[in-house]
Image (cartoon, rainbow over all chains, first blue to last red; front, side):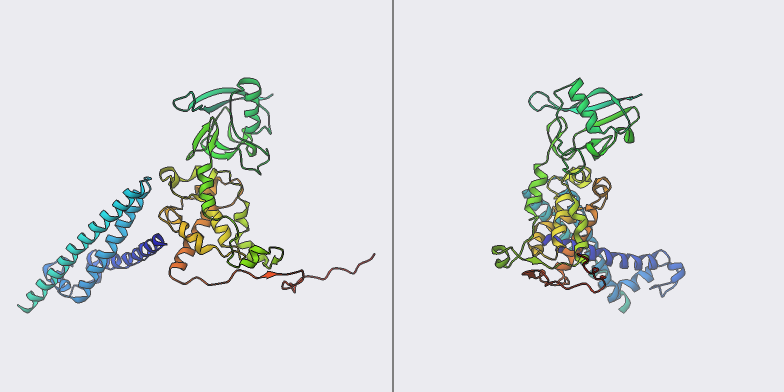
Length: 127
Length: 271
């Protein structure tokens, strides 16, 4: 049943990605129309608007959640592709371990970057 | 006038050949003649060493599954002129080892099938000890799994499966459809035991839903649908959202089932 657990979360992560990427598209790519989360006007990618979003707790959480679900969804998909090559059980375990370590490492790095930019944006806002 | 069709038959004898090769035979074909008839003609008139597996000659036993013009089919169930006008390629089912010529080694399929407990599993020892009674099962409950009982284990679905082509440990459409057949049976109580295998890393979740298994099935079993049902049930079981129904009760003696109310009574006896 362990694979059932992984697959269920893989599907759930896909739904979360769909929502969060939809939000990303609304903010970054149709920002000229929606002006969503861009209170300073102009481009959504402008420094002021980026700092506004980076300083928001909502976006800090959103970035980290998106990072987590995207890494899980992608790495589980990669694991599935690799498992279809009729690997030996020991190699399958090694693949799972390597992907787990890579995923945790990338998640740690990304989360650290999100926290760091959040702190910089907060400090910038305080002057 | 019979048409002359070139049969391009894959030959392989593991004792003398390094690899499979193709040999061509000219076969006079009349309307209504099946591929199995064509192979018999070759064996009787052209090459007695040709080997293949068959039994019933009427699409029931599932022995003569082979690759006809690149598609897994039953040789007894396929008329030559329906799929060929000048040339016909005949090969063994892919995704299996070849025993000889057109004879695939189906043991890998049957080992996976047996591992999934393709029989009624019940926890109550009384039923195992005393199987004389009957189970009550409504027509609707029968309908839930009836389609999957038509499987004849010919291996055509396994040969068509793209996942099995790369992942030899994948359980495959036939064993998974058999698991669904018993999981959906209200007399059965073995779903959670089967979940250990169907939910494993080479179980139902490896199905990409290419649907080729259902396209080639000569009995219309639709194994792809069975696998999707399995996936849904596995997820519901994991999330503890599946209904915890007990297997249907055993009846002792006739007349204990719920009588249907909408059936017209039989006319009075005249004799």
